[in-house]
Image 1 (cartoon, rainbow, N blue to C red):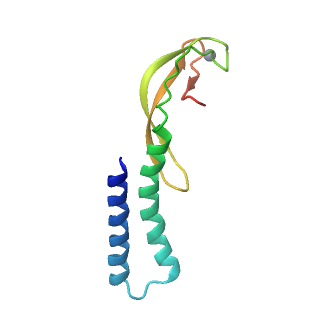
Image 2: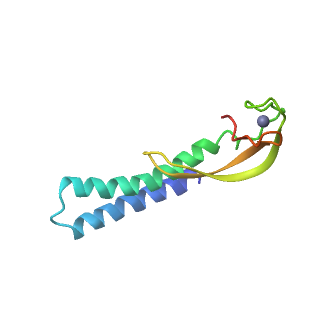
Length: 110
Ligand SMILES: [Zn+2]
C-alpha cells in the first residue's frame, strides 16, 4: 500500500464516519467512539502490516540455530501470520523457519 492508497483509505474512513454520524442523530459519544475504533483498526491494521514488512519479511541471510534444541533452522517459505493488536489486526506474510529436529518454528526476528 503506497501513500496515495493510504490517504485514499483515510479519506474513505472520514467520509464513512461522517455519513454514519449524519444517519445516527441520537448516537452517544460511546457509540460514536465504537464506530471510530472499528474503522481505525481496519486502516491502522493495513498501516501496521506495511510498516512491519517495510524492512523485509523475515528472510534470514545466515543460518541460525534453533533456540529450543540447537538444531539448524530451515527456511520454509512465506506463511500467513495473523497478528492481533488493539491498534489493528494485520495479516502478515512472513518468512517461516522450522527446526526439523524438534519442530520448533520461528518468524524472525522473533
Ligand atoms: Zn529444534
